[in-house]
Amino acid sequence: MILDDLRSILLSERETGRLTSVAPDIFEKGHRELSAITKKVYEFEDPFSDDARAHIDETLAIRQTLQDLFAIRSRKIIALTIMHAEGNYYDREEVKRMIPAEKAMFEEITTSIEQSQDILLKNAPLLPHAVHAHPAVTPEAEDEESGEPALFMDEEQAGPSPEPIRADAPLTHPCALVRVLSDMESFMGVDGRIYTLSKGDIVTLPERNAAVLSERNIVLNINLCK
Image: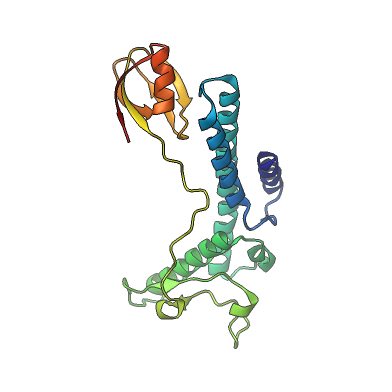
């Protein structure tokens, strides 16, 4: 299960001060799993049933684990950028363990620090319109003279950035405008959002959730919207 895999990776990250090797698509797998579970939730006739709640709890756990994994790996990457900028030793094997998006972050931050050092410490002119595109560090990108990874190329070399392609585009859900008749504890709708209802509120809810709450006299359905 993807949740078990994510938790195992997170545990490994917490046990060491270095980046661990992970699959390049680990976050994409997490988002695909979230999309699949959300679709299952939407198929339940009663989105407040025990089975639906179990699936919703799983999505919340996956989201939180992805967030924790991103946070701990990002802190390690930021520490590496500071060591690189200050000329201190760091294990270049850790750069190789970064997934593509993390490598891009490392290069962006490193370049920004170096530019700030030039401006603040060497009195170099500020170039507000300078734009750089930063490819992933690969052996092929190494500078021919220094043998060091090429950290950036100019905009003309890089070309236009392609639009990202999302395989797990969020689902769209018909919605309903309702008036809340009584307070209700927070819950996750079939659209993946968390709702907290208080008596007297006029809110928009996913149609599936609104229908169930209307049957239970918790909300009054005003109209439907798309």
